[in-house]
Amino acid sequence: MKTDIKSMLPDEIESALIEMGEPKYRAKQIFSWLNKGVGSFNEMSDLSKKLREALDKRFYITVPRPIRKQVSQLDGTIKYLWELMDGNAVETVVMSYKHGNTVCISTQVGCRQGCAFCASTIGGLLRNLEPSEMLDEVLFSQLDSGLNISNIVLMGIGEPLDNYDNVMKFLKLVNHPDGMNIGMRHISLSTCGLTEQIDKLADLNLQLTLSISLHAPDDETRSKLMPANRGRGVDELVSVCKRYFERTGRRISFEYAMIDGVNDLPDHAKKLADIAKECSAHVNLIPLNYVEERSFRPSTAENLKKFVKILDDNGVNSTVRRKLGGDVDASCGQLRRKAANKGD
Image (cartoon, rainbow, N blue to C red):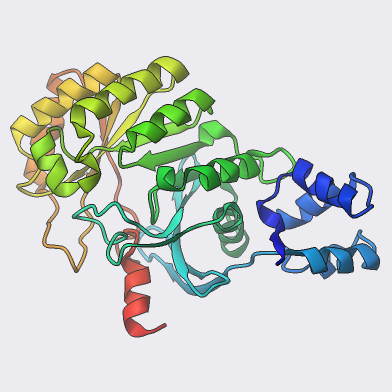
């Protein structure tokens, strides 16, 4: 069986080269080529033919194939549907902001968290993505779009902390100075609240931004929306968020999808304000994206305005996320579902 070389760090490639009787300095060259998007060892022109052939016998290079590419006519947001080497598909979104270009990547093929308003979890979890496949989402989105990617959000299909080891390896790869060299402070990881994994992440002190998909401030509402809340609860989540802030000094962001009549009432806003203040958290309000298979609707403009005012009156800083890519199925999971239903 061949080994996935793009999931290897330079020191791991060095060790493999030494086993092959090759000089370890070649590892830096190979790692650099991989981060330029080569699809074969033959493209590594500064390596000898003998070494290229030896590498090809032991390793393989992941290369995703773009099945769909949709470009928003409203704001230029680009939505990719990538086919992986085993035939599965994942989605990636490239968004442009004043501060730079952000790529939102998937971390799993499907998702098992079962959030009631999300398209990604329909059909469940098929498998975890490898570190190389997550790196490919960033790399090939940059190469295809021609846009320099400066920021990464792990908020696409899947739960990043449910694929903990592979995600941590990806972060090392994409942060490496000889690779894409994207700084940790330019990376945001979003989780539905796997509290045991959040503690593990805090111990690493990576200086990334942790975003908690909260979506409800009480157990009754949150457990209906997010099965991951059952057995943990909002109080436990608040406690782990406080520990994360204390250990890392990094302010947490609460993601809150505004759902009409479900979690957007004044009482919800007041409870959310209390939680945000206790955790020293910022609140990011997200107008819900409509998902055909779900019955939920986004909050009205009036309710959203009232909600923001209550947070503000209670001393909580909040922002309303600008809705991008509404005409290209930018809500993660939708494009993959449509392609699967059509047999593409």
